[in-house]
Amino acid sequence: MVFAAIYLSTWAGHYTTRDGIHKINWAKAMLDGKVHDTTSKYGIGHTLLAIPPLAAARIIQTRTGIHAEPALYTLMFVMNGALFLSLVAFYLAHFYPPHAVWKTVLILGLATIWWPYTKLDFSAPLVLTTAFLGFVVMRFGSPFWGMLIVAFTLAIRADSVAIVAPLMLWCLFTHRSVRVGFQLVAAAVPSIALVGWSDWIRYHSLFNHGYDGEQFSNPLLVGLYGILLSSGKSIFLFSPPLILGVLGWRVFAQRDRLRSDAWLFLSIAVAQLILFAKWWDWSSDDAWGVRFVIPGVLLMCIPLVAILARRKLVIPLVGAGIAIQLLAVLVGPLNFIEMFRAQTFQREALYVGGRNRVDFEDIRYDPSYNQILGSWILFRELIHLPPSPANPRDAQYIGTRLFDAAKPQVWVSAAYWDLIWNARRK
Image (tube, rainbow, N blue to C red):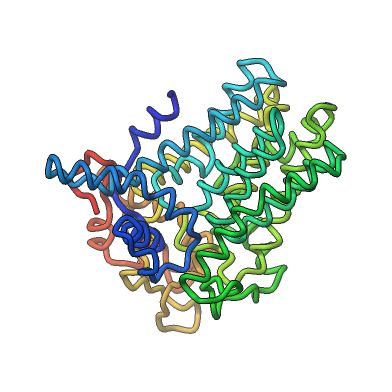
């Protein structure tokens, strides 16, 4: 309830992504009995999860005339965010005292990219919550029912195999039973069949997932550097508490009851890292940070519970994390990116004269054009303390600042509070 209230206070209540529109349109077609009527290439699982709020919105509009569709649909992601943290608290409560559990979920919920993604309708957060729910059921209950839940992530995103496979191996390792192995395979069959059926009705093929021309063609080292260390997309930059999770992993794993879990979290994070480092769009734009690896990042943050006593390290990293997420939830996680796509940002070419366009490679790799910095400028516009223009003569020697790369009115027009009660909403 605590996190539901916090996330509702920063809820935007409007559609946020172009990808999401395709998923919503397919859900509407299903509600109209037109399952085949879709151009969506995305997993059917997300669309199925969207049907209940969209159906409720139709009923409300029919009976009251109120158009509640965007609000009810996006409310699903607010509740998803709170549910995941409740599951983490339930899991950790078996091994750690209440104060440590509360501190951990507060850090995960407010100082990592999890908070901004309660405002966005991407699939990765749904994958994480579904997978972690299945993990908890497997951990404290039934391997079959747990895997039945986990396998549904394949219907949300086909690349969830990087989560499902490690969970299967973890369960086999912890149970060491042929019977359990058969249960796990049987539990995965319904979701695999659902994926096959959805591909068949769209493409008349069991092997076409709608991503023709999109490949794992990026150089591995480029992707690894970008996801881990780049100045514009590093997972440590967007989620500073991940550093605590990495440092705490060894201590977390030293507990006998948690050792296999620790290796599971690490294996999922590594599998996702390698998989998406090779993807042509490794940065997952448009996004706040790298959205593809949200499950791996959040799972690897959980071990920070083991080093909460190291306050000199915990306090600054958590403080930095909260500050970064506040920028996203107040001005909108994608507001700067959308402005950047719509406007032409230009900079002076150093020493050789002329001007050239600032592009996404600059956002990825140049700290002068960082997405967080762009959101900071938008926030300053909102509080009426915009940066002062730099001396134009300095630009040819030290580079053009992000604020000076676009006209001041561009920043002014793009700056607004991304909150549901704000009159300026999408």
